[in-house]
Amino acid sequence: MSTSAAVASNPQPAVDFSALKARQHSAWSSGDYAIIGTTLQIVGESLCEALDLRAGSKVLDVAAGNSNGALAAARRWCEVTATDYVPALLERGQERARADRLPIVFQEADAEHLPFADQSFDNVLSIFGVMFTPDQERAASELIRVCKRGGSVGLANWTPDGFIGQMFKTIGKHVPPPSGARSPALWGSRARLDELFPKAVASIAATPRQFVFRYKSPDHWLEVFRTYYGPVLKTFAALDPAARDTLTDDLLALMERFNRADDGTVVVPSEYLEVIVTRL
Image (cartoon, rainbow, N blue to C red):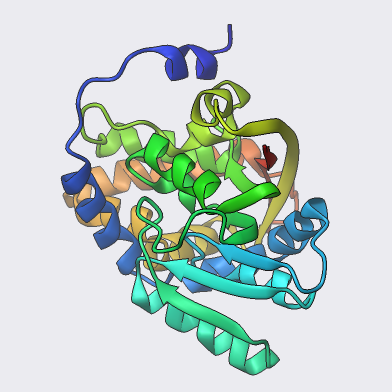
Protein backbone atom coordinates (compact mmCIF):
# COMPACT_ATOMS: atom_id res chain seq x y z
CA MET A 1 0.00 0.00 0.00
CA SER A 2 1.26 3.49 -0.85
CA THR A 3 2.05 6.01 1.86
CA SER A 4 -0.84 8.19 0.70
CA ALA A 5 -3.28 5.29 0.88
CA ALA A 6 -2.05 4.30 4.34
CA VAL A 7 -2.47 7.84 5.65
CA ALA A 8 -5.92 8.09 4.10
CA SER A 9 -7.07 4.87 5.80
CA ASN A 10 -5.85 5.64 9.31
CA PRO A 11 -8.41 7.08 11.72
CA GLN A 12 -7.83 10.72 12.59
CA PRO A 13 -8.16 12.38 16.00
CA ALA A 14 -11.00 14.85 16.45
CA VAL A 15 -10.35 18.26 14.96
CA ASP A 16 -11.96 21.63 15.63
CA PHE A 17 -13.24 22.35 12.12
CA SER A 18 -14.43 25.84 13.05
CA ALA A 19 -11.02 26.87 14.31
CA LEU A 20 -9.29 25.30 11.32
CA LYS A 21 -11.69 27.02 8.92
CA ALA A 22 -11.01 30.39 10.56
CA ARG A 23 -7.27 29.79 10.26
CA GLN A 24 -7.55 28.85 6.61
CA HIS A 25 -9.88 31.76 5.82
CA SER A 26 -7.29 34.11 7.28
CA ALA A 27 -4.58 32.55 5.13
CA TRP A 28 -6.52 32.70 1.86
CA SER A 29 -7.66 36.26 2.62
CA SER A 30 -4.05 37.40 2.95
CA GLY A 31 -1.69 38.18 0.11
CA ASP A 32 -3.29 38.14 -3.33
CA TYR A 33 -3.86 34.63 -4.61
CA ALA A 34 -4.98 35.96 -7.99
CA ILE A 35 -1.37 36.88 -8.82
CA ILE A 36 -0.57 33.17 -8.75
CA GLY A 37 -3.97 31.85 -9.72
CA THR A 38 -3.98 33.56 -13.09
CA THR A 39 -0.88 31.57 -14.10
CA LEU A 40 -2.93 28.38 -13.64
CA GLN A 41 -5.50 29.31 -16.29
CA ILE A 42 -4.61 26.39 -18.57
CA VAL A 43 -5.78 23.94 -15.90
CA GLY A 44 -9.30 25.39 -16.03
CA GLU A 45 -9.37 25.02 -19.80
CA SER A 46 -8.11 21.43 -19.63
CA LEU A 47 -10.61 20.42 -16.95
CA CYS A 48 -13.55 21.88 -18.87
CA GLU A 49 -12.47 19.90 -21.92
CA ALA A 50 -12.18 16.74 -19.82
CA LEU A 51 -15.73 17.36 -18.58
CA ASP A 52 -16.85 17.76 -22.20
CA LEU A 53 -19.00 20.74 -21.23
CA ARG A 54 -21.91 21.52 -23.52
CA ALA A 55 -23.27 24.98 -24.29
CA GLY A 56 -26.21 25.86 -22.07
CA SER A 57 -25.17 23.55 -19.23
CA LYS A 58 -25.54 24.88 -15.70
CA VAL A 59 -22.07 24.85 -14.12
CA LEU A 60 -20.96 25.60 -10.55
CA ASP A 61 -17.34 26.50 -9.72
CA VAL A 62 -16.73 25.76 -6.01
CA ALA A 63 -13.94 27.45 -4.04
CA ALA A 64 -13.36 29.25 -7.32
CA GLY A 65 -10.47 31.47 -6.24
CA ASN A 66 -10.01 33.92 -9.08
CA SER A 67 -12.35 31.81 -11.21
CA ASN A 68 -10.20 29.97 -13.75
CA GLY A 69 -12.79 27.20 -13.97
CA ALA A 70 -15.77 29.53 -14.15
CA LEU A 71 -14.18 31.60 -16.91
CA ALA A 72 -13.31 28.50 -18.93
CA ALA A 73 -16.88 27.20 -18.61
CA ALA A 74 -18.35 30.58 -19.58
CA ARG A 75 -16.16 30.61 -22.70
CA ARG A 76 -18.01 27.43 -23.67
CA TRP A 77 -21.40 29.24 -23.38
CA CYS A 78 -22.37 27.55 -20.13
CA GLU A 79 -24.56 29.18 -17.48
CA VAL A 80 -21.96 29.62 -14.74
CA THR A 81 -22.03 30.39 -11.03
CA ALA A 82 -18.73 30.94 -9.19
CA THR A 83 -18.51 30.66 -5.41
CA ASP A 84 -15.84 31.23 -2.79
CA TYR A 85 -15.82 32.13 0.90
CA VAL A 86 -13.25 34.90 0.40
CA PRO A 87 -14.97 37.98 -1.09
CA ALA A 88 -11.70 39.48 -2.33
CA LEU A 89 -11.11 36.44 -4.53
CA LEU A 90 -14.59 36.70 -6.03
CA GLU A 91 -13.86 40.36 -6.82
CA ARG A 92 -10.80 39.29 -8.79
CA GLY A 93 -12.93 36.84 -10.72
CA GLN A 94 -15.50 39.53 -11.42
CA GLU A 95 -12.80 41.81 -12.79
CA ARG A 96 -11.69 39.11 -15.21
CA ALA A 97 -15.25 38.29 -16.27
CA ARG A 98 -15.98 41.94 -16.99
CA ALA A 99 -12.79 42.28 -19.02
CA ASP A 100 -13.72 39.25 -21.13
CA ARG A 101 -17.44 40.18 -21.19
CA LEU A 102 -18.45 36.82 -19.79
CA PRO A 103 -21.80 36.54 -17.92
CA ILE A 104 -20.93 34.76 -14.65
CA VAL A 105 -22.90 34.90 -11.40
CA PHE A 106 -20.57 35.39 -8.41
CA GLN A 107 -21.80 34.36 -4.98
CA GLU A 108 -20.07 34.15 -1.61
CA ALA A 109 -20.49 30.62 -0.27
CA ASP A 110 -18.78 28.01 1.90
CA ALA A 111 -17.89 24.82 0.03
CA GLU A 112 -19.04 22.79 3.03
CA HIS A 113 -22.49 24.44 3.06
CA LEU A 114 -23.44 25.28 -0.51
CA PRO A 115 -26.61 27.43 -0.66
CA PHE A 116 -28.18 25.54 -3.55
CA ALA A 117 -30.92 22.92 -3.83
CA ASP A 118 -30.16 19.29 -4.55
CA GLN A 119 -29.28 18.56 -8.20
CA SER A 120 -29.13 22.24 -9.18
CA PHE A 121 -26.22 21.93 -11.65
CA ASP A 122 -25.32 19.78 -14.63
CA ASN A 123 -21.63 20.00 -13.76
CA VAL A 124 -19.71 21.03 -10.65
CA LEU A 125 -16.01 21.80 -10.69
CA SER A 126 -13.21 22.97 -8.43
CA ILE A 127 -9.62 23.76 -9.34
CA PHE A 128 -7.16 23.55 -6.44
CA GLY A 129 -9.98 24.82 -4.25
CA VAL A 130 -12.27 22.36 -2.49
CA MET A 131 -9.24 20.23 -1.61
CA PHE A 132 -8.37 22.82 1.06
CA THR A 133 -11.65 22.51 2.98
CA PRO A 134 -11.22 21.42 6.63
CA ASP A 135 -14.14 18.92 6.62
CA GLN A 136 -13.28 16.93 3.52
CA GLU A 137 -16.17 14.47 3.77
CA ARG A 138 -18.70 17.26 4.12
CA ALA A 139 -17.30 19.14 1.13
CA ALA A 140 -17.31 16.04 -1.08
CA SER A 141 -20.90 15.32 -0.08
CA GLU A 142 -21.92 18.86 -1.03
CA LEU A 143 -20.31 18.58 -4.47
CA ILE A 144 -22.34 15.46 -5.20
CA ARG A 145 -25.55 16.80 -3.63
CA VAL A 146 -25.83 19.84 -5.92
CA CYS A 147 -24.89 17.88 -9.07
CA LYS A 148 -27.69 16.42 -11.17
CA ARG A 149 -28.02 12.68 -11.66
CA GLY A 150 -25.90 11.71 -14.64
CA GLY A 151 -23.85 14.88 -14.27
CA SER A 152 -20.17 15.15 -13.44
CA VAL A 153 -17.97 16.69 -10.77
CA GLY A 154 -14.60 17.79 -12.14
CA LEU A 155 -11.63 18.44 -9.87
CA ALA A 156 -8.00 19.43 -10.20
CA ASN A 157 -6.13 18.43 -7.04
CA TRP A 158 -2.42 18.68 -6.23
CA THR A 159 -0.92 15.26 -5.46
CA PRO A 160 1.04 14.43 -2.29
CA ASP A 161 4.25 13.65 -4.19
CA GLY A 162 4.12 16.54 -6.66
CA PHE A 163 5.86 19.87 -6.19
CA ILE A 164 3.00 21.70 -4.46
CA GLY A 165 2.20 18.68 -2.30
CA GLN A 166 5.84 18.60 -1.21
CA MET A 167 5.81 22.37 -0.65
CA PHE A 168 2.96 21.97 1.82
CA LYS A 169 4.82 19.11 3.49
CA THR A 170 7.86 21.37 3.80
CA ILE A 171 6.03 24.31 5.36
CA GLY A 172 4.17 21.88 7.64
CA LYS A 173 7.51 20.91 9.18
CA HIS A 174 8.02 24.53 10.22
CA VAL A 175 4.45 25.36 11.29
CA PRO A 176 2.64 22.05 11.91
CA PRO A 177 -1.08 21.86 11.08
CA PRO A 178 -3.58 21.36 13.92
CA SER A 179 -3.82 17.87 15.36
CA GLY A 180 -6.22 15.73 13.35
CA ALA A 181 -6.24 17.93 10.25
CA ARG A 182 -5.98 15.95 7.04
CA SER A 183 -3.56 17.02 4.34
CA PRO A 184 -5.27 18.77 1.41
CA ALA A 185 -3.00 16.80 -0.91
CA LEU A 186 -4.88 13.60 -0.02
CA TRP A 187 -7.50 14.77 -2.53
CA GLY A 188 -4.77 14.03 -5.08
CA SER A 189 -4.69 10.30 -4.20
CA ARG A 190 -7.07 7.74 -5.67
CA ALA A 191 -7.43 5.95 -2.33
CA ARG A 192 -8.74 9.09 -0.66
CA LEU A 193 -11.10 9.87 -3.55
CA ASP A 194 -12.63 6.41 -3.15
CA GLU A 195 -13.24 7.24 0.51
CA LEU A 196 -14.68 10.69 -0.20
CA PHE A 197 -17.11 9.58 -2.91
CA PRO A 198 -18.45 6.18 -1.81
CA LYS A 199 -22.14 6.80 -2.56
CA ALA A 200 -24.26 8.12 -5.43
CA VAL A 201 -21.27 7.76 -7.76
CA ALA A 202 -21.25 5.77 -11.00
CA SER A 203 -17.54 6.15 -11.67
CA ILE A 204 -14.37 8.02 -10.74
CA ALA A 205 -11.76 8.72 -13.40
CA ALA A 206 -8.45 10.06 -12.04
CA THR A 207 -5.71 11.03 -14.47
CA PRO A 208 -2.28 12.39 -13.45
CA ARG A 209 -1.46 15.69 -15.15
CA GLN A 210 1.37 18.20 -14.94
CA PHE A 211 1.16 21.94 -14.52
CA VAL A 212 4.49 23.67 -15.16
CA PHE A 213 5.40 26.65 -12.97
CA ARG A 214 7.56 29.14 -14.86
CA TYR A 215 9.34 31.99 -13.06
CA LYS A 216 12.33 34.24 -13.68
CA SER A 217 14.45 32.50 -11.03
CA PRO A 218 14.06 30.45 -7.84
CA ASP A 219 14.33 33.68 -5.82
CA HIS A 220 11.60 35.24 -7.97
CA TRP A 221 9.32 32.25 -7.36
CA LEU A 222 9.90 32.43 -3.62
CA GLU A 223 9.30 36.19 -3.56
CA VAL A 224 5.96 35.79 -5.36
CA PHE A 225 4.74 32.91 -3.19
CA ARG A 226 5.97 34.54 0.02
CA THR A 227 4.21 37.80 -0.86
CA TYR A 228 0.98 36.64 -2.48
CA TYR A 229 0.27 32.98 -1.65
CA GLY A 230 -1.58 33.07 1.67
CA PRO A 231 -0.41 29.76 3.22
CA VAL A 232 3.25 30.54 2.50
CA LEU A 233 2.87 34.18 3.58
CA LYS A 234 1.28 33.12 6.89
CA THR A 235 3.95 30.48 7.52
CA PHE A 236 6.76 33.01 7.16
CA ALA A 237 4.86 35.50 9.34
CA ALA A 238 4.60 32.93 12.15
CA LEU A 239 8.36 32.34 12.34
CA ASP A 240 11.23 34.27 13.90
CA PRO A 241 14.01 35.56 11.58
CA ALA A 242 16.28 32.55 12.03
CA ALA A 243 13.45 30.11 11.37
CA ARG A 244 12.46 32.11 8.28
CA ASP A 245 15.96 31.70 6.92
CA THR A 246 15.76 27.96 7.46
CA LEU A 247 12.39 27.78 5.71
CA THR A 248 13.81 29.80 2.83
CA ASP A 249 16.67 27.33 2.48
CA ASP A 250 14.29 24.36 2.58
CA LEU A 251 11.96 25.82 -0.05
CA LEU A 252 14.83 26.70 -2.37
CA ALA A 253 16.24 23.19 -1.93
CA LEU A 254 12.83 21.80 -2.88
CA MET A 255 12.78 24.07 -5.91
CA GLU A 256 16.23 22.86 -6.94
CA ARG A 257 15.07 19.25 -6.71
CA PHE A 258 12.12 19.82 -9.06
CA ASN A 259 13.48 22.52 -11.37
CA ARG A 260 14.37 21.20 -14.84
CA ALA A 261 15.69 24.53 -16.17
CA ASP A 262 19.46 24.95 -16.55
CA ASP A 263 19.51 28.65 -17.46
CA GLY A 264 18.75 30.19 -14.05
CA THR A 265 14.99 30.33 -14.61
CA VAL A 266 12.30 28.14 -13.05
CA VAL A 267 10.58 25.40 -15.03
CA VAL A 268 8.97 23.17 -12.42
CA PRO A 269 6.43 20.47 -13.33
CA SER A 270 3.92 19.98 -10.53
CA GLU A 271 1.73 16.91 -10.62
CA TYR A 272 -2.00 17.18 -10.08
CA LEU A 273 -4.84 14.72 -10.44
CA GLU A 274 -7.56 15.53 -12.97
CA VAL A 275 -10.68 13.93 -11.52
CA ILE A 276 -14.06 13.29 -13.14
CA VAL A 277 -16.71 11.90 -10.79
CA THR A 278 -19.91 10.81 -12.52
CA ARG A 279 -23.04 10.96 -10.37
CA LEU A 280 -25.59 8.14 -10.39
